Length: 551
Ligand SMILES: Nc1ncnc2c1ncn2[C@@H]1O[C@H](COP(=O)(O)OP(=O)(O)OP(=O)(O)O)[C@@H](O)[C@H]1O
Image (cartoon, rainbow, N blue to C red; front, side):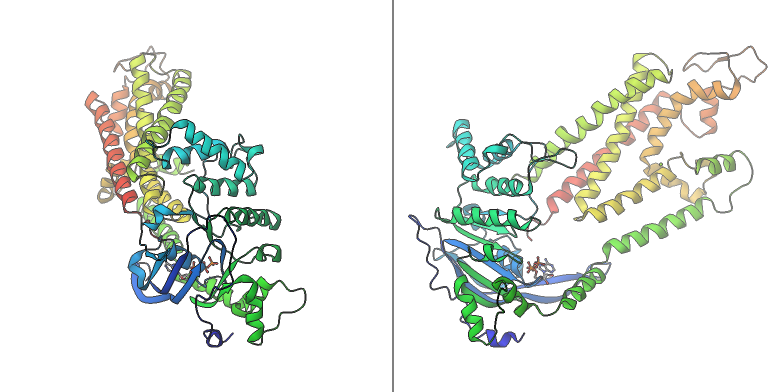
């Protein structure tokens, strides 16, 4: 398509969009928006040249349904984010956004609501509980009593037609929950709690079947008739959805192709010589005009993979590092016992502040979820294994298990707070754990390790846990197995035997493994694990604070 022909349309033309409501919602105007991004390139994330993704875009959006349409990558979400004040303001080269003729900057976020594409609902809570959560967080405590909040939630449940599923859990991968449409309606309800008159939605129909999509847009249409200005991006709506739009903004490569009454778009394109076949959906027709060919989309996807290769690089790096590591560890592996035997044999395992999130994550999720199950686990297996029956010894065991688990989870927390994609987090978490397992002394006898690599053991969570556990276990069990001891008293250094076996003690075995079995040796490991927990948590908090809230 030759966009130059379409530039003739006066940008922002919107006459004819008149929705009759008692109290109209706000009118949003944006003028001459130029928005640029600077892409990071290569594994070092070098800053590339600046690219303009919105080019002199203007428009007026009034009470009613305002749709932003365009092919993939045309700038729909970017435009929505810029006018909603959610896009990094550093990229805005020129232009301004006005609401009811007043300039707004990031304050717009407080007057309006934005429904994100990936909802933020808690799957284990019911629809009503989720809405109440939003109300408790976002409605001012002084002006709104608990009863007011509950009343507000009930009215939203009714307005959105959620009565039948109000007490059904949203659902998780383990719990069968509400349907996709009910879930989306609940996400919208989470934002309606503050009674915004200006509502932004990023692709509200994505991932829904066409009937559900239809019902969501019908709901938005109904809400708009209550005096709301609803602005949303949408990909490829069916005709029954398209005909509900009051205003249409059509984008192509960051430029406005059409901005005006949705019902007049067809006439406009036909006046330019484009004919829509009989029975063709007008929305599809507009996209076909601006879209170009499919191969263009494939090319864009391929470039995206090539230019966003962090995941592939990280996987490649992980393979190379692991290969080098294994090569070094088994380098010229001695054929003598016992190291060779051990190594070969064992080679075959926008709602709340950052601080609020961090503290609730640590104290309500991480700590109880590590400590309680581990105490249950320990109380079952500890006595089954026949270890030292004293309660103090049991506490030491459970404490060690909990500290190891906490250290592991803190490290995982740090990694997940540092990267934005699940795939990257997966790769990056595997790497330190492989290192720690290898250098923890579980897979490899640390004595057989090259001297210059052995310092790495000090960074291993497994090493500290294993040292404590071995200290207890070896004294108790190892000696029994190895030397057929008839009578063995836990944690004493004396093995009483009536065979001719040498009186080799647990301590001697531990010493041979390079493990400090003194009381200080025990606490040293706990302190080291606590140190790892504190360091990881501190850095995780810093990373959480550094997360870019702009899109
Ligand atoms: N933060 C960013 N960094 C790099 N590129 C970006 C960024 N934001 C937007 N872009 C680029 O700007 C262009 C428009 O993106 P945008 O997400 O607005 O398009 P879209 O029309 O919503 O696409 P889709 O329908 O695929 O979601 C795309 O080419 C996109 O790659």
